[in-house]
Length: 123
Image 1 (cartoon, one colour):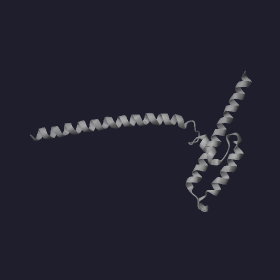
Image 2 (tube, one colour):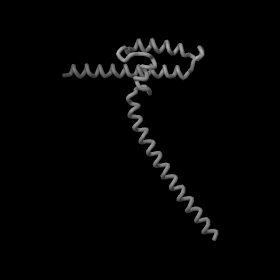
Image 3 (cartoon, one colour):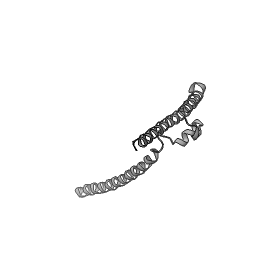
Image 4 (cartoon, one colour):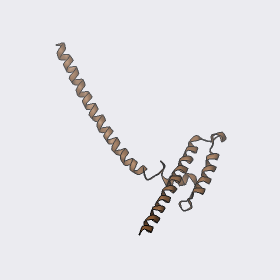
């Protein structure tokens, strides 16, 4: 009688564990598929935040973007939002990531320009 009870508990536990494991696996597979789709979108934003958002944070027009302008706005906003002046580290982080994104975007655009020039010279 005790053997039957123990076998029953083991079989029931194994089936519950098996169902839970398969459900967890399905959820993990779904999560990884959605994160892969999200990474495709994230690759459009070079530095972790979208370029449009970075432009808004630094207050720069897309047509006026230059390395000097980005550095000027970054230095001002980073200083104004310093913790010593009673402002937040969060805002400083946003300003930093905006600057980083725009610098990487400018580098990328420069590389594209160089590749186009090389391509036109070879023809």
